[in-house]
Image (spheres, one colour):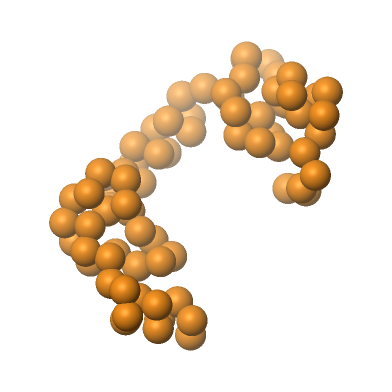
Length: 74
């Protein structure tokens, strides 16, 4: 209900990433082209399973997360 009210009071009229005009909401503030690009980038190289930083092939965690694990859980 809160998202609906915020969308009603503060409508998003452009993509938050590329600023393409359109009607967007708090749950999905980006356009379909940006979604497709995010999927391409997420599959382009491996990322750390904890923080999302790009890492070398064959690794699962970045050096920072191996040395100092973040306070949050996945």
